[in-house]
Length: 290
Image (cartoon, rainbow, N blue to C red; front, side, top):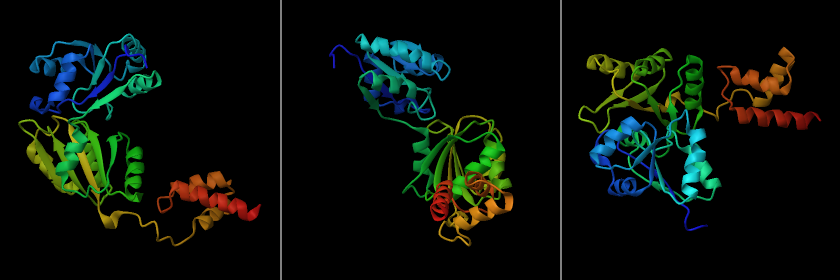
């Protein structure tokens, strides 16, 4: 690689308290040629507190595809670029992935400068089982998508899940779990690391009571941790009927192809097989009757 090529730094920034900025992160932001920021106005507030005066260029979700080429050309000419988001670690439900992919393809070194991440911070204080967990980004807006996701949560081997949610939709999220009678525990983390940081814990109904008691719950961003109760998880090992039998029944009863039978069985709310298990059963039937 040409020694004159610049580098790309992915720099985590505080999620609320500016004192959480790492010394290394501050040094990188002070020395790079360009800081690619999700929102230059919000980033300027932090940089002013840190007394950093480097050049800011916007890199948000609406322009990241077009801006990637610009940043790549700058780095190929020898300049270094640091990517930051409004708060936390870039690319975790924030812009940055397109630029990283382009940099990797161009042979430009990419270095992570770790620090705050709202999802990880919320997980760490949840008190839930963290032997394994999944991060899903922002919770779906449509109820149909929410129901599909809830079903997925109940089918996995992992019981702990992390989400982000807007303060304007946080009550909708809690109400959804209540309406579905979901057997889960929740930990809603609001304004983490800030002066008025709060955590709302318990069943969905208990969490709703706490939000209503707070009053102005529709302020500040939320990281939501959900732990599915063990008895609420679908038991994959207890199948009353084989997957092959379910598929044959759907094909004979409704005159469906094997592919359509998989989709029909998968959409049945009483079905406990995964899509991959049903596809495997369809292939097995094909081999048996060839």
